[in-house]
Image (tube, rainbow, N blue to C red; front, side):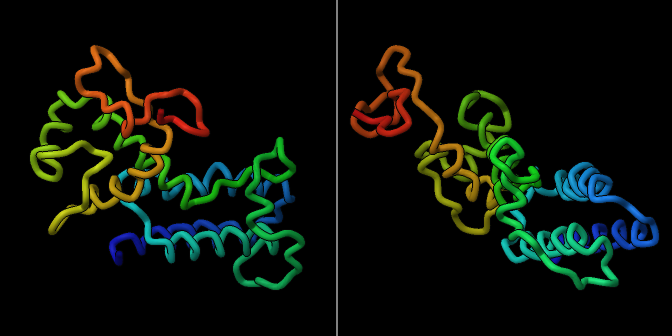
Length: 188
């Protein structure tokens, strides 16, 4: 999506303004976590970033972390970015993985459609995109909006952890709806 090309440029401009400063590793860590990884958050809440765009941004963050500048990209990368983006409690540095963060933020948009089906937004989406099914069984359809495409990409993340509240039991299909609280097998 060419519309989201501004994200890479904003990150590059921000890093270029920091190139002249001498920052320690701790300073670079704070800037990476609190500024650079926060820049694309609003766009990630609404749109599914293309995987290539996420990789480009990851390369920029990796380059800045290890070299301290964008002009001099040389240096040894002592660990892979996957190892650095592990939580601190598990031995990493806690950098966010952009693709997973994007799916989590889009899942937050899908959750109210699933849990509050009587809200106005849920009724509009249901009438437009999935009138005869539920959100977890919906398909993108013809000519979907960018927001709906993003919700469809995050649907499997929400569906993996969603459980059916039985209530009166009329709408629950015991064999096909996940309703048990165990993660290994939520079905009967």
